[in-house]
Length: 476
Image 1 (cartoon, rainbow, N blue to C red):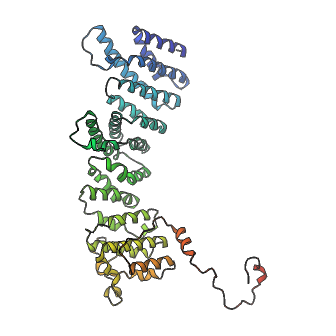
Image 2: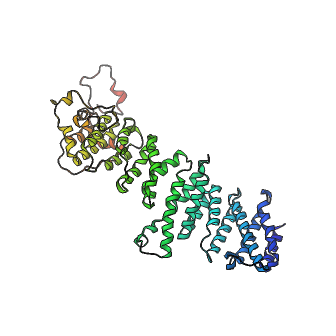
Image 3: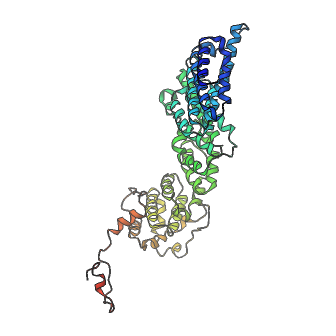
């Protein structure tokens, strides 16, 4: 075959149905052409696209065929051949040659869009199409198909395709595959499915029924996707965005509990990133998880103060400990442990921690006794607080005192002593700003302005000091 003969053959098939058998010749050209004859494969795919742009305008291509006459046999054969052609063209989406891959993508998409003129988006062929795109590991193609997933039928078909794909490849050792699945899955926006019109169960339109199925599919698709093997980087990305981008769109977010608890138990960064999602499930979806605060307490170590995520952790602590329903012993345990660990923390973190403790005491007045206990109190001479106890209910924090504040008050950084004074003598009940955005450099610049510009000098002049050597630098 040559490009010219392929073009002539396509014209004959389109004009005369008696040449329909020659469609298999074009399909074989697509499937069997090696890399040295890429131009033939491109010509064959283009020819099939042109042929079916005509055939797919006939509604009988998608209707059940009855009877055994010649017309029925022809239509049955055409429907079966179309499926073979679609599968053959779709298989070329993963071609290493970008021209063939692009042509196969646009042709398959054209086939699917043509079908929607007569029927709903075909589920099996759309699954085949999306599966081929994911297996191609082509970021550009995934972005292109994401742009197509805009109407309700496409969203539903894409979610079901991803769910099936995730199930099939859950045990694959190739962790890179899940990255492309996540790229497509996160691009499916179902926010419109939560408008008042669609949430109202009394509305029984066709669109509302589709939306109900979309929300249900979104739920099951994410559960299946989370079972896939993932790189640590992707795992952390998912955990950090789950509470904002996924949970609000799920019908039953409680199904995430196994994934989140397993992540929480891993320790380190994974535990930290799973906190927000777990807390949302507890507070908004009535999840019963009594181990949340004990595990959070165990996470509060001195090592955590030196990680890049410490400011994020403190901001979450500010949210988690605000509730007035929390028992005093629990809040006191966190305050005590925060203060104790602050003795080994960097200066800019100490400032944030002390401000957090100030807010917690304003929100939970019963914990102020930790500060007001004077030198005569037994806890100052022998602290009853058990630092090694992992259970906040058994650490005796409420019987202790914050003697650590006296140590922090003598810190070399002037900013620390000023925030400690604010804590010990609160002037009002207004919560203070934590200042999470300030790092080491910002803290240094802020307090270096207060230093005396005239440095202290030796009171007696050295005998062997030659001023002329430094005359261009200093004025004596």
